[in-house]
Length: 255
Ligand code: KIV
Image 1 (cartoon, helix red, strand yellow):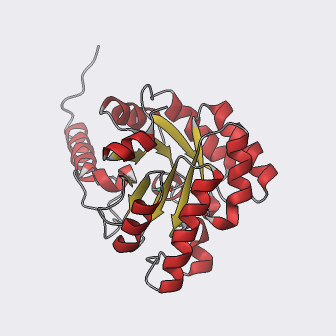
Image 2: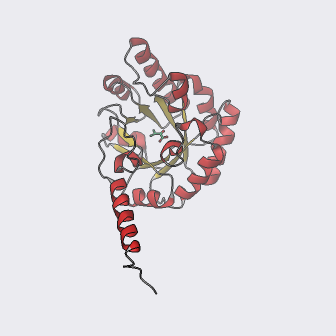
Image 3: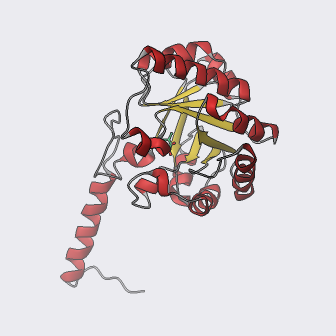
């Protein structure tokens, strides 16, 4: 496992993207990404659910196994889905299942409220990535994807959460849609790297859902993402070309 704290100390930015299948994982890995996350965002961008709250452990393990086959150099982190870490004991059992599937680290959503869960995982020797700020698994209770850290009390909670997960043994912490100035304050006051998503440029690293980065989920793109490709357009173009040439009876090769 790369020394991510050392990368932070050196000011070397950490890169992270999601993958849910073998070819994507292999492409990201061959491109030199530092961290590949099998995110439960797969519920939306791969399985077509409305949010991540329907994702099951079986689905996550299935996709983790596929991603493992494509990864040689990146750190492979797997997301623990909702209700698979309701107690510290359940958290460790779930984390062990991900390790058995080939993940090198796990992530769950929560800060100070989950210190006992995080300690149980790290004490079992499983590297742990924290996730604070907007927590997609709580989107229903929250009534939407809201920016975090606007009020003083939210900012204080975020800062306390970041310190709590560091003390509990996390090797890094994802900050999801946190006000950039609060993300900067957190980044400057903890020893583990912050990995931002929609949280400004001051984080030690950045993570995105790969489908958003490459334009593979064209029906919704978060405001903070600038896609680098339009893969959905390419797929549509290729499929239309295939339909056209098939209907015209041309281009059907035989062996
Ligand atoms: O599920 C996910 O993909 C995530 C991130 C993008 C941080 O948790």
